Length: 150
Image (cartoon, rainbow, N blue to C red; front, side):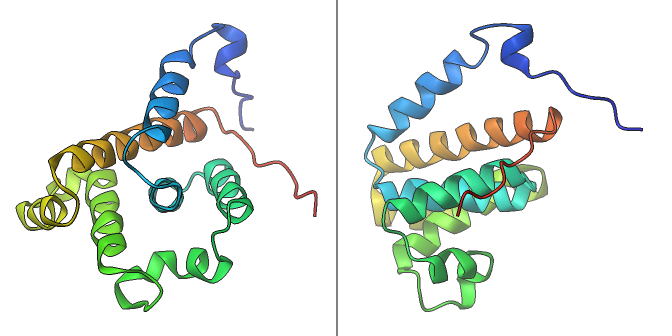
């Protein structure tokens, strides 16, 4: 039998506020909406957070992202649907999300700085860290995606 998990904000009101603030700051950063969604969806796929995958996929589509790109995201290396800059962004997302494997490699970091500049690389790293925090909350509390309304 699986124990029912507490929804953290009902146990400790305001506990999510720092992450909400960080998410809002990232949304106002140098990242485009598309870049932000690519980071959120890919990290959530890797972490197996169904709640976040569904939430951010729905938001991305509502903001004009093409479904075929979202479907191809796990196969980005071989897909013609992503620009070279997006591929660097996705590779950063994978390496940082899977940080225990080898961390963010010098090669990918250097490519990112060349493609985006140091300020945007900082924004990318914070966006990846933020969604990973949300994924860990979602997985730890067994958050369940809402059924589709479509």
